Length: 341
Ligand code: ST9
Ligand code: ZN
Ligand code: ZN
Image 1: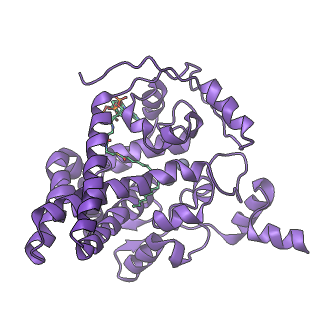
Image 2: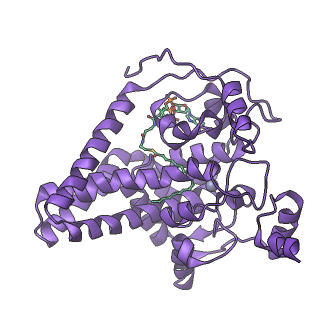
Image 3: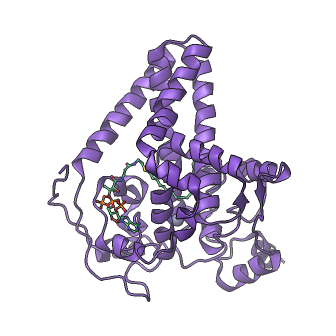
C-alpha cells in the first residue's frame, strides 16, 4: 500500500556498459548459467522507505549537532560501544555464523549475537541470511538484491528503497534455508522481531546512559540510538558498495568484489571482500588473521578460547596461492615478490 511507481527505468545492459567503459572488471551482469531472466530491471521506488531514511538521517544529524552543542563525548563513546556490539552481531553473527556457517557457536554465544544483531536493526537474521546467500550465489545478476551493476548508490542503500527484481525472489526460492530455520534462536527472533528489535536498537541504548550517567534523555536518544544506528548502517552498506568498486582483486579478477583495507577498518574486518567471495566459508573472511584490520576475527578467536565458538573453518595457504596464481590480478603480495625478482 505504501508503494508508488517511479517513471524512472534502469536497464541492466546500460549499467553493464557503463562499468565496462570505466575499465572496471565486471562480473556477469546478465544471466548466470542457471538461468536468471533477461527481464530488464524496472525500478519501483518504495516511498515509505525513502521517507523513513530521510527521517533517520535527519535525526542522526540532529544527534551529531547535540553531541557538539552539549559536549556529549562520553555519550559518543558509549554510542561507539553500541556500534561495536551491533557490528559484531552482523559480522560474527548473521554474516560469518548464520549466513556462511564458517564456525559453530554454543547457545549462549548465539543468544548474545542474536541480541547484538537486533541492536543493529538490519532485518531479522532469517531475512538477512536469505538476501545474503542470494547475493553470493547470483552476484551482480538480476537475482542479486544489491546488484552492484546498477551503480554505487543502488548497491549501498538504493536497493532498500526499491522493490526487488522478480529474479531475487525466484532465485531466492532455490536457497536452502533449512539450517537457519533449525536454530531456535533464529525462530525466536523472527517471531518476536518487532518487540526484540526496538528494545535492543532504540530503547536500551538510550536508557542505559540516561540512568547510569544521568545524561539528558534527548542526547541519549539522538546520539546513542539514532546517530549510532545511521552510522552503523553506512558502515555495513560500504561492504556492498565500496567493496564492490574500489580496490584490488588479488584472488579473482573476474568478479566485482575487491579487497579494501579502509572498508575492513570501518566494518570490523569485512572489507577483504574479494577474498570473501572466493572463500566464503573462512571464519576470518580474509586471508590474514591480522586483528588490527579484523576485529571480528579477534572476537571469534577469543570466543574459541573460552569454548563458545568451535569448528572454525579456514583455507589452506596452498589452496589460496594456487587460486592467486590462477585467477588473481597480480596484486597479491606473493605475486608482487615474484614480479620483483
Ligand atoms: C539493512 C540490510 O540495512 C543490510 C544488509 C547488508 C548486507 C551486507 C553484506 C556484506 C557482508 C558483510 C557484513 C559487514 C558488516 C559490517 C558491520 C559494521 C558495523 N529470497 O523483501 P520483500 C520473497 S536493513 C527468497 O518485502 P519487496 C519472500 O517471499 C535496514 N525470497 O520484497 C518475501 O516475503 P517474506 C533496515 C525472497 O516487496 C517476499 O519476496 N530495513 C527474497 O520487493 C517479499 O519480500 C529496511 O530498510 C530472497 N532473497 O520489498 C527494510 N527476498 O519475507 C528494507 C524476498 O514474507 N526492506 N523474497 O518471506 C524492505 O522494505 C523490502 O525488503 C524492500 C523490497 C522494499 C527492499
Ligand atoms: Zn559482496
Ligand atoms: Zn558473505
